[in-house]
Image (cartoon, rainbow, N blue to C red; front, side):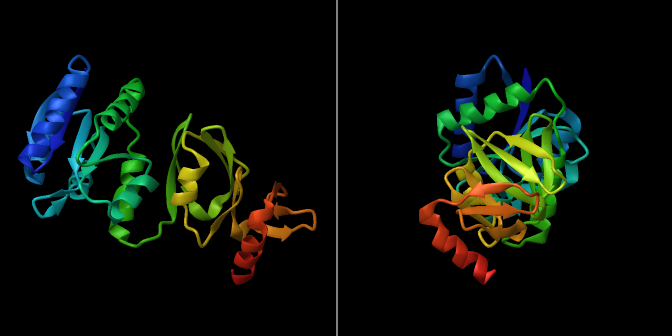
Amino acid sequence: MITALILEDEPKSMKMLESLLFSNFAQDLKIVATCNNITDAESAIYNLKPELLFLDIEVAGRTSFELLEKTVGYKYEVIFTTAFDHYALKAIKFSALDYLLKPIDEEELKIAVNKIKEKKKSAPDMDSIKLLIQQMKINEPTFSRISLPSVYGQEIVNINDIIRCDSEDHYTRFTLANKKKLLVSNTLKYYEDLLPQDKFFRIHNSHIVNIDHVIRITKEGYVLLSDDSTAEISRRKKDSFVQKISKG
């Protein structure tokens, strides 16, 4: 049984989330605290040590990131909830954490909670939460590090160290400057949208490359990268890629 805390300052949203959790996870999840402010949530974490936090991003004029910073010494999983698709969501994605947009979709809630259930056998990885706290303190539209969910856990990687990303069905294989390879459980399209477009370019349906690691473009229509690997450039992407390289 997973113990959970809900932080939400809108009574209707609170009741809706409680109802959805009860109807779908009555046998798997127990709500041990419902809070409408940061102070009460902090006290509940200290006293009850919940394993899962449902956190509204903006609560009574404050943000739940303050709560994370105060309680990061504890072990818990986090699912954010918010009515706004704003800057914070990008930081959450870079930290490989889950979020739900209000009004909460029941199927999306099931997916998010089931992920937590699957991870319950291992201790929560707080590195991603620490990364998120750092990202929010910087308060800039670009980020220097990203958390990648691999079979080994959450890998915190410097953006500049990513050489290439390659599609493998519904997964993405990252190749890093230290020659390490990571198979990550998100699609190439997901990372195309997330990674900074001034540094990364999708040259093919199967390949994204870091422009800073491009050595040359061959006559045969391939790109040579800093790790001596090559990747094919699609014909329709070649002109825009060459233009991008020349500007960089």
